[in-house]
Length: 220
Length: 275
Ligand SMILES: Nc1ncnc2c1ncn2[C@@H]1O[C@H](COP(=O)(O)OP(=O)(O)OP(=O)(O)O)[C@@H](O)[C@H]1O
Ligand SMILES: [Mg+2]
Image 1: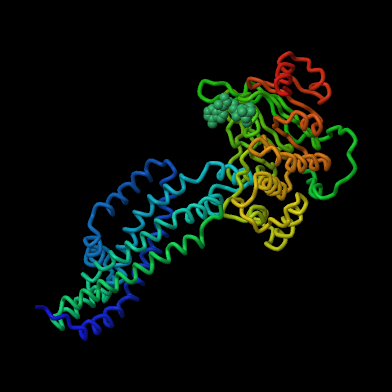
Image 2: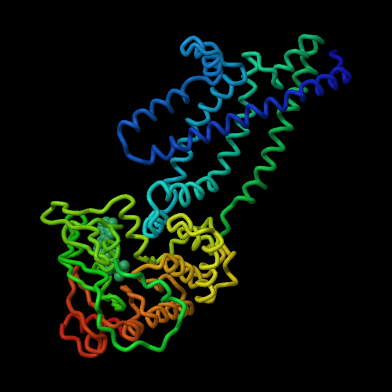
């Protein structure tokens, strides 16, 4: 019989949770990058420009159809060769996860923008807003509030996917679990602690998501 | 450039004597529009003088909404010429575009044409107050405090001071439409275009909105009003324009058009509308 060592479990939990901040940092930064890149992509995709459209299709299809782990490795090992600059493991992780997220969010945003009634564009135009102002003050703020649920959902996906960055040596929750497991030769305690850490973060996030949504909801 | 009728809204002067339009605010010449093979506007000529209140009536599908939307280029025309306050917004001859205003220029002119929609089209993510101040601040560059003061003044004028912080989703139809009117009014437009602004309202809410339009008329606001409220049209308008099949069939003083229409089609329409 395997004897569950509570002492090791406590050590593991303590050690692993100290990676929580890094995991969150990477997830938050990736989400921010994803929104910043995904928003203009999504807006651009609502305009029917063939050239731009084809370019975005390629961008989105590439990020969608290549495993996230491969993308992370690619940004970490290959980009330095191509560009001649060394990216730190954390930076490479954020770039890979963030751009990957942007490809996903571009579609979400595009759908959200197309879902705003035409009357909003017309009212805005009739008041004298130009296209850019209409987007900035009228369409995008409404769209973002309506897309808050998928956005927060994507954040939770990111927290979980970020475990992959342990592969390139980032000292996140997962990587710390690996270390404990090796050091004590106790995988059960180590990975239980890892699971507990991810569960706790994601659980709290998804529970507060509801509250955040309500805070930003458009009053009906 | 002429001076803008800027402080017209708040003072309630005694009813003005019949106006003789000295200046032309809207001038439309031979406006034509088709959607696909269907002709919606078949050559509309219309002049609205400064301070005039024109009521546009006619059966459903006659092209009233389309005409209104053409004036501020929400709908592009196929032919004709649109002049507002002396500026040509659009001029198309035989498929050749002589002028078609775009970009900043168009936006600037649109901001001087108040448009009120049948379905309000308020910005749902902004409070009533912010719906009014946003265009003031971002288009006119009015500082926030001043914009809010102006907006509050206008909201009180339509009896909605206590609803300034409410969101459109929490307002009744009549309240929403009054906010929409104020939002357009705050830009100090040269002309207001109303497209059946009461037809999406509960019957008991119609009066409060018509009342606002009535007071605007009394204050000398230039208006082109599409409406199905015949009694209201007769009371408020200085001219009635009857449209059918994309053409102006008859126009004239309300008493003449309503009581004694020259055209048999006008007569038929009015009989139907009053029954
Ligand atoms: N965007 C469009 N595409 C195609 N047809 C249109 C479009 N907009 C309006 N129409 C058609 O143009 C005709 C005139 O419409 P319009 O809305 O101007 O009439 P209206 O006089 O305002 O009618 P109502 O009193 O019902 O509001 C209608 O037959 C309508 O179906
Ligand atoms: Mg209509």
